Length: 118
Image (cartoon, rainbow, N blue to C red; front, side, top):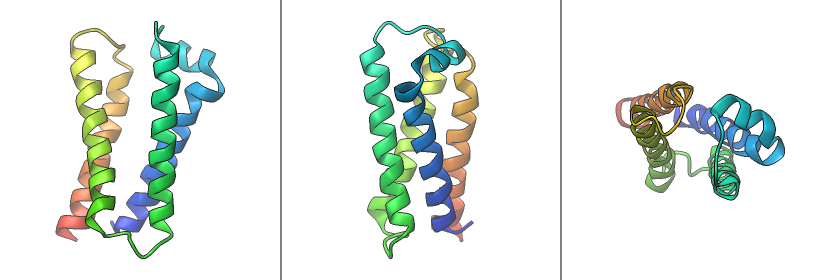
């Protein structure tokens, strides 16, 4: 898969999942479980949204295969995968986060194939 496709898909995913707790926190909390620090959830959502926008901007540019773009895409996926797995295993967050962990693993695999193999 070309890096441009990964940029588009991951960018859209990050924008949608980042905006979700900002736009409709009640449904986000219903699916992911109660949170004590709403401000932190919304701040994280904002950071994910901006990261997604950066990937979408790169998808529309000649910088698709530049190392900083790959680091943003892969680094974001790795950080979220580790957090999802770590905190689910310790029962801090609900097992529903393992679905996101699987998606983050898929992003890493797509980046690896698209940038390092293909």
